[in-house]
Amino acid sequence: MTGDHYFSAEPTSAAQPREVEFSVAGRDYTLASAGGVFSADRLDPGTAVLLRKAELPGTDVTGELLDIGCGFGPITCVLASVAPSTTVWAVDVNERARELTAANAARVGAAERVRAVAPDDVPADVSFAQIWSNPPIRIGKAELHELLRRWLPRLAPDGVAWLVVAKHLGGDSLHRWLVEQGWQVERHASQKGFRVLRVTR
Image (cartoon, rainbow, N blue to C red; front, side, top):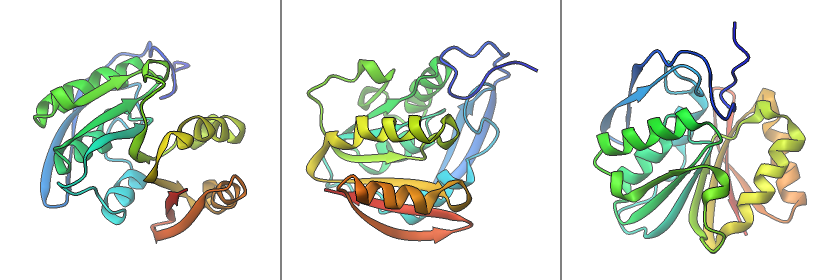
Protein backbone atom coordinates (compact mmCIF):
# COMPACT_ATOMS: atom_id res chain seq x y z
CA MET A 1 0.00 0.00 0.00
CA THR A 2 1.17 3.53 -0.70
CA GLY A 3 0.21 6.77 0.98
CA ASP A 4 -1.09 8.27 -2.25
CA HIS A 5 -4.43 10.00 -2.47
CA TYR A 6 -5.93 11.47 -5.60
CA PHE A 7 -5.19 14.85 -3.99
CA SER A 8 -1.48 14.05 -3.59
CA ALA A 9 0.55 16.65 -5.47
CA GLU A 10 2.96 14.12 -6.96
CA PRO A 11 1.70 10.52 -6.80
CA THR A 12 4.47 8.04 -6.18
CA SER A 13 2.48 4.93 -7.11
CA ALA A 14 3.05 3.30 -10.49
CA ALA A 15 1.04 5.00 -13.21
CA GLN A 16 -0.39 1.74 -14.65
CA PRO A 17 -1.96 3.42 -17.70
CA ARG A 18 -5.51 2.50 -18.64
CA GLU A 19 -8.44 3.89 -20.60
CA VAL A 20 -11.90 4.96 -19.49
CA GLU A 21 -14.83 4.94 -21.90
CA PHE A 22 -18.12 6.79 -21.46
CA SER A 23 -20.78 8.66 -23.43
CA VAL A 24 -22.22 12.13 -22.78
CA ALA A 25 -24.73 14.04 -24.88
CA GLY A 26 -24.48 11.60 -27.77
CA ARG A 27 -20.70 11.59 -27.99
CA ASP A 28 -18.42 8.70 -27.04
CA TYR A 29 -15.21 9.44 -25.17
CA THR A 30 -12.15 7.23 -24.63
CA LEU A 31 -9.78 8.96 -22.24
CA ALA A 32 -6.41 8.00 -20.83
CA SER A 33 -6.24 7.40 -17.10
CA ALA A 34 -3.70 6.06 -14.62
CA GLY A 35 -3.28 5.04 -11.02
CA GLY A 36 -2.93 7.77 -8.42
CA VAL A 37 -5.72 9.97 -9.80
CA PHE A 38 -9.37 10.28 -8.81
CA SER A 39 -11.60 7.43 -10.05
CA ALA A 40 -8.85 6.06 -12.26
CA ASP A 41 -10.78 3.02 -13.51
CA ARG A 42 -14.14 4.48 -14.53
CA LEU A 43 -16.18 7.62 -14.88
CA ASP A 44 -17.01 8.43 -11.26
CA PRO A 45 -20.75 7.95 -10.57
CA GLY A 46 -21.08 11.50 -9.25
CA THR A 47 -19.35 12.93 -12.31
CA ALA A 48 -21.65 10.83 -14.50
CA VAL A 49 -24.73 12.26 -12.76
CA LEU A 50 -23.35 15.79 -13.06
CA LEU A 51 -22.69 15.48 -16.79
CA ARG A 52 -26.09 13.87 -17.38
CA LYS A 53 -28.27 16.14 -15.24
CA ALA A 54 -26.66 19.59 -15.28
CA GLU A 55 -27.18 21.95 -18.23
CA LEU A 56 -24.12 21.55 -20.40
CA PRO A 57 -22.96 24.79 -22.05
CA GLY A 58 -24.05 25.20 -25.63
CA THR A 59 -22.09 26.23 -28.68
CA ASP A 60 -23.10 29.85 -28.01
CA VAL A 61 -21.24 30.00 -24.68
CA THR A 62 -17.97 31.93 -24.79
CA GLY A 63 -15.29 32.94 -22.31
CA GLU A 64 -13.55 30.94 -19.62
CA LEU A 65 -14.84 27.80 -17.91
CA LEU A 66 -13.36 26.18 -14.80
CA ASP A 67 -13.19 22.52 -13.76
CA ILE A 68 -12.16 22.30 -10.09
CA GLY A 69 -10.39 19.03 -9.30
CA CYS A 70 -10.21 17.86 -12.89
CA GLY A 71 -8.75 14.38 -12.28
CA PHE A 72 -7.93 12.80 -15.64
CA GLY A 73 -10.20 15.31 -17.33
CA PRO A 74 -13.66 13.90 -18.12
CA ILE A 75 -15.56 17.09 -17.23
CA THR A 76 -12.95 19.26 -18.96
CA CYS A 77 -13.08 17.20 -22.15
CA VAL A 78 -16.88 17.25 -22.28
CA LEU A 79 -17.01 21.01 -21.69
CA ALA A 80 -14.36 21.68 -24.33
CA SER A 81 -16.24 19.46 -26.79
CA VAL A 82 -19.74 20.91 -26.34
CA ALA A 83 -18.62 24.55 -26.01
CA PRO A 84 -15.98 25.05 -28.72
CA SER A 85 -15.80 28.83 -28.25
CA THR A 86 -14.57 28.57 -24.65
CA THR A 87 -11.27 28.08 -22.87
CA VAL A 88 -11.43 25.48 -20.09
CA TRP A 89 -9.19 25.84 -17.05
CA ALA A 90 -8.63 22.39 -15.57
CA VAL A 91 -7.33 22.77 -12.03
CA ASP A 92 -5.89 19.98 -9.91
CA VAL A 93 -3.19 19.75 -7.22
CA ASN A 94 -2.23 16.35 -8.66
CA GLU A 95 0.50 16.66 -11.29
CA ARG A 96 -0.33 13.32 -12.91
CA ALA A 97 -3.98 14.36 -13.22
CA ARG A 98 -2.98 17.56 -15.00
CA GLU A 99 -0.75 15.66 -17.43
CA LEU A 100 -3.55 13.22 -18.23
CA THR A 101 -6.05 16.03 -18.72
CA ALA A 102 -3.74 17.78 -21.16
CA ALA A 103 -3.26 14.53 -23.08
CA ASN A 104 -7.00 13.88 -23.13
CA ALA A 105 -7.73 17.41 -24.32
CA ALA A 106 -5.54 16.58 -27.32
CA ARG A 107 -7.48 13.33 -27.83
CA VAL A 108 -10.76 15.27 -28.19
CA GLY A 109 -9.20 17.94 -30.39
CA ALA A 110 -9.20 20.70 -27.78
CA ALA A 111 -5.55 20.92 -26.74
CA GLU A 112 -5.28 24.60 -27.61
CA ARG A 113 -8.35 25.50 -25.51
CA VAL A 114 -7.58 23.58 -22.31
CA ARG A 115 -5.27 24.91 -19.61
CA ALA A 116 -4.42 22.08 -17.19
CA VAL A 117 -2.73 23.88 -14.33
CA ALA A 118 -2.09 23.87 -10.60
CA PRO A 119 -4.46 26.09 -8.59
CA ASP A 120 -1.86 28.82 -8.05
CA ASP A 121 -1.20 29.03 -11.81
CA VAL A 122 -4.62 30.44 -12.71
CA PRO A 123 -4.15 34.18 -13.34
CA ALA A 124 -5.84 36.29 -10.68
CA ASP A 125 -7.73 38.39 -13.22
CA VAL A 126 -9.56 35.49 -14.91
CA SER A 127 -13.27 35.20 -14.14
CA PHE A 128 -15.42 32.29 -15.21
CA ALA A 129 -18.68 32.08 -17.14
CA GLN A 130 -19.20 28.64 -15.65
CA ILE A 131 -17.61 26.59 -12.88
CA TRP A 132 -18.00 22.81 -12.79
CA SER A 133 -16.90 20.46 -10.05
CA ASN A 134 -17.29 17.09 -8.46
CA PRO A 135 -15.48 18.55 -5.45
CA PRO A 136 -13.02 16.49 -3.39
CA ILE A 137 -15.26 15.96 -0.36
CA ARG A 138 -12.75 13.65 1.31
CA ILE A 139 -10.21 16.41 1.87
CA GLY A 140 -12.41 17.41 4.82
CA LYS A 141 -15.15 19.96 5.42
CA ALA A 142 -12.89 22.88 6.36
CA GLU A 143 -10.66 22.33 3.32
CA LEU A 144 -13.69 21.92 1.04
CA HIS A 145 -15.19 25.18 2.28
CA GLU A 146 -11.85 26.92 1.73
CA LEU A 147 -11.70 25.51 -1.81
CA LEU A 148 -15.16 26.85 -2.64
CA ARG A 149 -14.44 30.20 -0.99
CA ARG A 150 -11.41 30.47 -3.24
CA TRP A 151 -13.09 29.73 -6.57
CA LEU A 152 -16.79 30.59 -6.42
CA PRO A 153 -16.16 34.36 -6.02
CA ARG A 154 -14.45 34.24 -9.41
CA LEU A 155 -17.76 33.43 -11.08
CA ALA A 156 -18.79 36.13 -13.55
CA PRO A 157 -21.77 38.27 -12.43
CA ASP A 158 -24.15 36.28 -14.64
CA GLY A 159 -22.20 33.02 -14.32
CA VAL A 160 -23.36 29.66 -13.04
CA ALA A 161 -21.60 26.94 -11.06
CA TRP A 162 -22.58 23.29 -11.17
CA LEU A 163 -21.57 21.03 -8.28
CA VAL A 164 -22.34 17.40 -7.55
CA VAL A 165 -22.16 16.02 -4.01
CA ALA A 166 -23.25 12.68 -2.60
CA LYS A 167 -26.11 13.05 -0.15
CA HIS A 168 -24.43 10.73 2.35
CA LEU A 169 -21.25 12.83 2.15
CA GLY A 170 -23.05 16.03 3.09
CA GLY A 171 -24.74 17.23 -0.08
CA ASP A 172 -27.60 18.85 1.81
CA SER A 173 -25.40 20.47 4.46
CA LEU A 174 -23.17 21.88 1.72
CA HIS A 175 -26.29 23.31 0.08
CA ARG A 176 -27.19 25.06 3.35
CA TRP A 177 -23.64 26.33 3.85
CA LEU A 178 -23.54 27.85 0.36
CA VAL A 179 -26.82 29.66 1.06
CA GLU A 180 -25.36 30.96 4.34
CA GLN A 181 -22.40 32.29 2.32
CA GLY A 182 -24.82 34.36 0.24
CA TRP A 183 -25.13 32.20 -2.88
CA GLN A 184 -28.34 31.36 -4.69
CA VAL A 185 -28.53 27.57 -4.67
CA GLU A 186 -31.03 25.33 -6.42
CA ARG A 187 -31.10 21.57 -6.09
CA HIS A 188 -31.31 21.02 -9.81
CA ALA A 189 -31.46 17.22 -9.71
CA SER A 190 -31.07 14.19 -7.49
CA GLN A 191 -30.06 10.79 -8.80
CA LYS A 192 -28.39 7.69 -7.37
CA GLY A 193 -27.80 9.42 -4.04
CA PHE A 194 -26.17 12.50 -5.58
CA ARG A 195 -27.30 16.11 -5.46
CA VAL A 196 -26.66 18.35 -8.46
CA LEU A 197 -26.52 21.95 -7.21
CA ARG A 198 -26.88 25.01 -9.43
CA VAL A 199 -25.11 27.96 -7.79
CA THR A 200 -25.42 31.60 -8.87
CA ARG A 201 -24.87 35.02 -7.35
